[in-house]
Length: 195
Image (cartoon, rainbow, N blue to C red; front, top):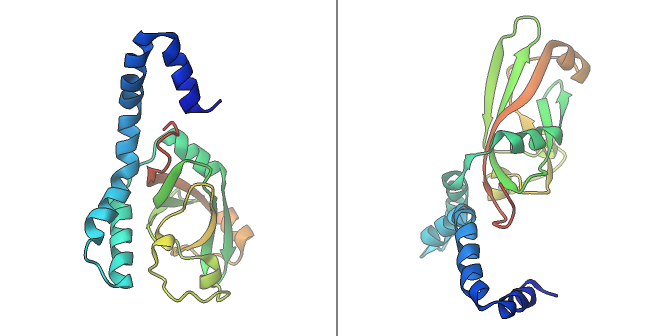
């Protein structure tokens, strides 16, 4: 039985429910629909008359950041649980993030704390340079493409974090420093998914 069939079945049982169900469902869905459509509305509004690919990509990227909101702490905990670090002496820190949330991630705040002194540096990431590019393993023709400015739900993504901290290896880095994702921004993709 589909949702539409089930709704007709319930409404057929009681004429009073016929009037309440549509209004109730509209009230419950409106706030999440508004959040989900900010990005889409922004793109549609600003794409009118755009004829170049470069302009279209710029609009998409700008709309990603216009639509972003702080991601709640409980969702951030889920995001952290799917994250791992790697380290390369020449290139620095790499993070692998498995986005197990319903949010498109548009920005991360990564904090690296020195264990001995508790001194910390914060790094705001809104461009997720693929690790393969940084290590010379892939050629990207357009590094400013919108797909490098977000991590989609369900996506596992490995990217480089340009840091000032130095180490010889991942083991050395792990002995000297602690890293953490302390804040994230994005937007809810699926209006039917609870926040």
